[in-house]
Amino acid sequence: MTVYDRLISCNDEKYRDFQSKLVPNIPKENILGVRTPDMRKIAKEINGTEEAENFIAELPHRYYEENLVHFFLIAMIKDFDECVSAVETFLPYVDCWPVCDQSSPKVFSKHHDKLLPFIKKWIGSEHVYTVRFGIRMLMNEFLGEDFKPEYPEWVAAVKGEDYYIKMMVAWYFATALAKRYDESVVFIEERRLDPRTHKKAIQKAVESFRVTEEHKQYLKTLR
Image: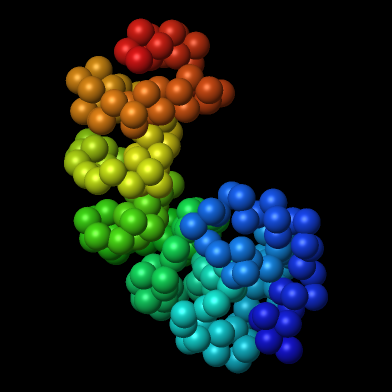
């Protein structure tokens, strides 16, 4: 049984119609209509098998859900070097925000020193979803103890008009305002982001339960 066979066994036409509206840049005929828990289950079932190894080696995939299963499998690789190599091989084939956003390799959290140069390279990429993934990894992994003031500088320096990059930049700063307020609020005060991203970052921060009420009221004055 192939990954496609496993996916098609639990597809739902109505869910396919719903999903196609969320990823308008993916042709509807390339979406099967499989829910995320089912895709994660498939990845777990075949993880570590020859089937999984062969599937990861087969690029590009035709279907949206195949790409998601691919990234879920990568996220379970326990060796850092193997995992980051698989990520780098796959990133050029990532073609929509859900595939970019739903997978977070667990091993990354244990190897921040080795991960950081890759993140910096990804953020500097010309490929939209590689940039988005790099910013998300910086957000996920480096707003805690390993935070450094230059990291939000990397994100603020990202240029381009792509919607999905702008929204990721806004997401990063909204999260930074929750976790690293003093270091990140200056980017809002000095309006270091383009107007649309600036407003979206404030909106997301104001909507967050992790940002204090006092900070929210101040941020509203900076819209």
